[in-house]
Image (cartoon, rainbow, N blue to C red; front, top):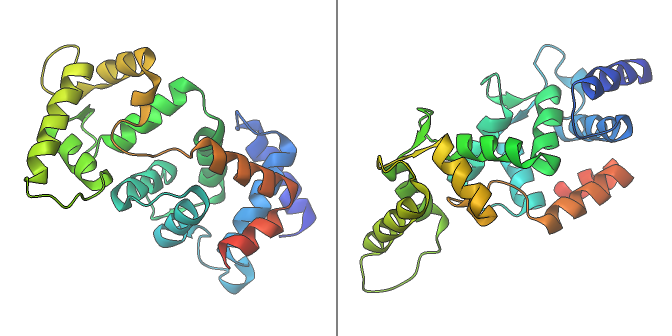
Length: 215
């Protein structure tokens, strides 16, 4: 991408970006095009990070291991549902992912956990996510029973209107009272250490980061 185009894209994306300054947006755009590869090779294809490339970044950079959650994070970034994360989605997604306000993060996490998009986190969804994110413990007991108990305990703590599922209002109230409940059903945000390392590397020199991801 030539300098003029990069400058124009940086200006456009900075205007709509809440949490990054112009220099940071510029670095993230450069990183995006390094990760995606040169557009000259695929002039007719819409440029973007596909699911596998994106999951690789979540895994290598942010230490995520839960397939279900990584898939949901990908969907959270891929706002137009075209199966790849374009440069605008990359900047806006990272803005929230790395530096979002509590309000933004609550909305994002709730959408990640609401697997079928019906506006509620149901018992079944909690069960699937908790079963997926908890370490498999070898024991004689039926692990499903333990997870069902955990779902009931979670509902007791978070289901304020007692309708057997979590609305956003339930979830928001619970998180405001106990911040640790933000990621109650699986890690879908970077931990502070990964976040700091990513920002230090990318905003210092994006080339180094690209080499690390691909090494």
